[in-house]
Length: 149
Image (tube, rainbow, N blue to C red; front, side, top):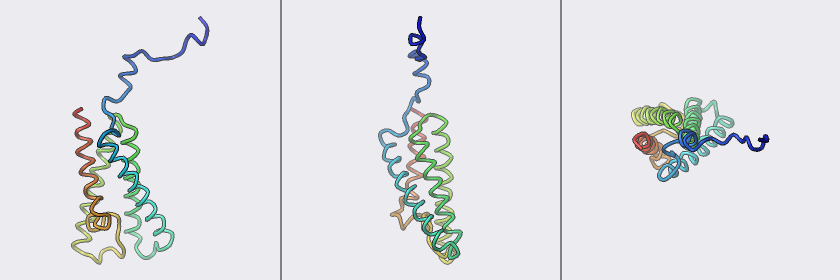
Protein backbone atom coordinates (compact mmCIF):
# COMPACT_ATOMS: atom_id res chain seq x y z
CA UNK A 1 0.00 0.00 0.00
CA UNK A 2 1.39 3.40 -0.95
CA UNK A 3 0.93 6.73 0.83
CA UNK A 4 -1.61 7.80 -1.77
CA UNK A 5 -3.73 4.74 -0.96
CA UNK A 6 -3.93 5.79 2.70
CA UNK A 7 -6.05 8.88 2.26
CA UNK A 8 -7.77 10.03 5.39
CA UNK A 9 -11.36 9.92 4.21
CA UNK A 10 -13.87 9.58 7.01
CA UNK A 11 -16.32 6.72 7.01
CA UNK A 12 -19.88 7.71 6.02
CA UNK A 13 -21.03 7.43 9.64
CA UNK A 14 -18.23 9.76 10.82
CA UNK A 15 -19.03 12.28 8.09
CA UNK A 16 -22.70 12.27 9.09
CA UNK A 17 -21.77 12.93 12.73
CA UNK A 18 -19.62 15.95 11.85
CA UNK A 19 -22.21 17.56 9.56
CA UNK A 20 -24.75 19.69 11.42
CA UNK A 21 -28.20 18.14 11.40
CA UNK A 22 -29.77 21.49 10.56
CA UNK A 23 -28.11 24.14 8.41
CA UNK A 24 -28.89 27.53 9.97
CA UNK A 25 -28.18 29.46 6.79
CA UNK A 26 -30.67 27.69 4.50
CA UNK A 27 -34.28 28.46 3.72
CA UNK A 28 -35.53 31.34 5.88
CA UNK A 29 -32.13 31.32 7.56
CA UNK A 30 -30.64 32.60 4.30
CA UNK A 31 -32.88 35.68 4.56
CA UNK A 32 -31.66 36.20 8.14
CA UNK A 33 -28.04 35.88 6.98
CA UNK A 34 -28.72 38.51 4.30
CA UNK A 35 -30.39 40.95 6.70
CA UNK A 36 -27.78 40.48 9.41
CA UNK A 37 -25.03 40.91 6.81
CA UNK A 38 -26.56 44.14 5.52
CA UNK A 39 -27.07 45.43 9.06
CA UNK A 40 -23.50 44.55 9.97
CA UNK A 41 -22.21 46.70 7.12
CA UNK A 42 -24.73 49.49 7.74
CA UNK A 43 -24.17 49.72 11.50
CA UNK A 44 -20.39 49.38 11.21
CA UNK A 45 -20.16 52.01 8.46
CA UNK A 46 -22.35 54.40 10.39
CA UNK A 47 -20.43 53.88 13.64
CA UNK A 48 -17.01 54.23 12.02
CA UNK A 49 -17.93 57.48 10.26
CA UNK A 50 -19.59 58.92 13.36
CA UNK A 51 -16.73 57.93 15.67
CA UNK A 52 -14.12 59.40 13.32
CA UNK A 53 -15.97 62.63 12.52
CA UNK A 54 -18.05 63.44 15.60
CA UNK A 55 -17.17 61.22 18.56
CA UNK A 56 -17.30 64.10 21.05
CA UNK A 57 -20.87 64.95 20.03
CA UNK A 58 -22.50 61.67 21.13
CA UNK A 59 -19.99 59.05 22.29
CA UNK A 60 -22.55 56.74 23.91
CA UNK A 61 -24.77 56.65 20.81
CA UNK A 62 -21.84 55.95 18.51
CA UNK A 63 -20.38 53.25 20.72
CA UNK A 64 -23.81 51.59 20.92
CA UNK A 65 -23.99 51.58 17.12
CA UNK A 66 -20.54 49.95 17.01
CA UNK A 67 -21.67 47.34 19.55
CA UNK A 68 -24.74 46.66 17.41
CA UNK A 69 -22.47 46.13 14.39
CA UNK A 70 -20.35 43.63 16.34
CA UNK A 71 -23.41 41.72 17.50
CA UNK A 72 -24.84 41.67 13.96
CA UNK A 73 -21.53 40.45 12.59
CA UNK A 74 -21.25 37.65 15.13
CA UNK A 75 -24.80 36.49 14.46
CA UNK A 76 -24.13 36.54 10.71
CA UNK A 77 -21.00 34.44 11.21
CA UNK A 78 -22.83 31.99 13.50
CA UNK A 79 -25.69 31.52 11.05
CA UNK A 80 -23.29 30.87 8.18
CA UNK A 81 -21.11 28.53 10.25
CA UNK A 82 -23.99 26.38 11.45
CA UNK A 83 -23.88 23.60 13.99
CA UNK A 84 -25.16 23.38 17.54
CA UNK A 85 -22.44 25.54 19.14
CA UNK A 86 -22.99 28.29 16.58
CA UNK A 87 -26.76 28.02 17.06
CA UNK A 88 -26.39 28.46 20.83
CA UNK A 89 -23.99 31.39 20.40
CA UNK A 90 -26.36 33.05 17.93
CA UNK A 91 -29.25 32.45 20.32
CA UNK A 92 -27.42 34.25 23.14
CA UNK A 93 -26.47 37.11 20.81
CA UNK A 94 -30.03 37.48 19.48
CA UNK A 95 -31.33 37.62 23.05
CA UNK A 96 -28.69 40.23 23.94
CA UNK A 97 -29.53 42.18 20.79
CA UNK A 98 -33.25 42.15 21.61
CA UNK A 99 -32.49 43.26 25.16
CA UNK A 100 -30.35 46.12 23.82
CA UNK A 101 -33.02 47.21 21.35
CA UNK A 102 -35.71 47.17 24.04
CA UNK A 103 -33.58 49.06 26.58
CA UNK A 104 -32.28 51.68 24.15
CA UNK A 105 -35.67 51.94 22.39
CA UNK A 106 -37.51 52.49 25.66
CA UNK A 107 -34.84 54.90 26.91
CA UNK A 108 -34.99 57.03 23.75
CA UNK A 109 -38.79 57.08 23.77
CA UNK A 110 -39.01 57.97 27.47
CA UNK A 111 -36.24 60.58 27.36
CA UNK A 112 -35.55 61.77 23.79
CA UNK A 113 -32.80 64.09 25.03
CA UNK A 114 -30.84 61.19 26.59
CA UNK A 115 -28.81 60.70 23.43
CA UNK A 116 -27.32 63.59 21.50
CA UNK A 117 -27.68 61.56 18.29
CA UNK A 118 -29.60 58.45 17.25
CA UNK A 119 -28.25 54.92 17.48
CA UNK A 120 -29.21 51.94 15.35
CA UNK A 121 -31.52 50.86 18.19
CA UNK A 122 -33.04 54.30 18.94
CA UNK A 123 -36.83 54.34 18.99
CA UNK A 124 -36.79 50.55 18.53
CA UNK A 125 -35.03 50.95 15.19
CA UNK A 126 -37.54 53.38 13.70
CA UNK A 127 -34.81 54.88 11.51
CA UNK A 128 -34.35 51.41 10.00
CA UNK A 129 -38.07 50.64 9.52
CA UNK A 130 -38.14 48.78 12.88
CA UNK A 131 -36.00 45.97 11.45
CA UNK A 132 -33.65 46.14 14.50
CA UNK A 133 -36.52 45.02 16.77
CA UNK A 134 -38.01 42.52 14.30
CA UNK A 135 -34.71 40.87 13.37
CA UNK A 136 -33.75 39.42 16.79
CA UNK A 137 -37.29 38.13 17.35
CA UNK A 138 -37.20 36.42 13.97
CA UNK A 139 -33.71 35.13 14.71
CA UNK A 140 -34.78 33.70 18.07
CA UNK A 141 -37.74 31.93 16.46
CA UNK A 142 -35.55 30.51 13.69
CA UNK A 143 -32.87 29.34 16.10
CA UNK A 144 -35.48 27.75 18.35
CA UNK A 145 -36.92 25.91 15.35
CA UNK A 146 -33.42 24.82 14.37
CA UNK A 147 -32.98 23.11 17.75
CA UNK A 148 -36.14 21.10 17.25
CA UNK A 149 -35.13 19.96 13.74
